[in-house]
Image 1 (tube, rainbow over the protein chains, first blue to last red):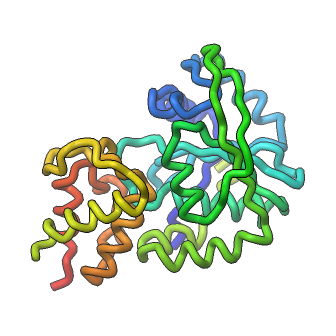
Image 2 (image 1 turned 60 degrees about the horizontal axis):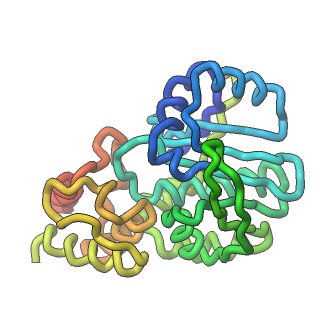
Length: 192
Length: 83
């Protein structure tokens, strides 16, 4: 049974995405920390629809929307991904599940050689996850947020060649429910 | 040892193993998202509970039933404990 489904961003899920995206807990960990208006989100969706190098999805678990996963620079050797969890219930292993899906999507469906990510210095969850997986930070950079504040980002670089070993080791340490979650996923077409 | 006692013990173990800190007393009313244990920490906790108790109640979980408080988390284990 496929537990995780990726639903492309569209006008159908725009209200939910905007509500999640504007939560304090999401903005706190985003480079762009401003509150996004409906109009700005609509313009973003229009640009996204015309850009084949970017894919943004709502993650559904057993058909319930639970978060967002994003990919940029698709088609290049190094794809960058990001994610956030939208709801307020604790779903054990959801974040790990999203990481597994991200690696598979970039490496297997888009033939990337590297999967990159950036994590805000104060955001411990993703840093813990990368430590759990054995992925070390490759460096940092400082950027300016929409609010004008500076933000230090930890950079991560997962290589396709390393993923099978990392995945196998992680799976051996995860409970049955999470192993089932990450075994397979489905990507919906834009029209589904 | 009751389910609850075992969960409390392993909750503290999961905090320690993920370098996390308990942010509020571990009471029934504690909101899990505010506990200090994140998604990975809960994955570690569920894995340890699977080792200790022999089952994982989240295998057949409906999204609507995912726990929000510590009491709900314990109740899930009590409810799904194999007979």
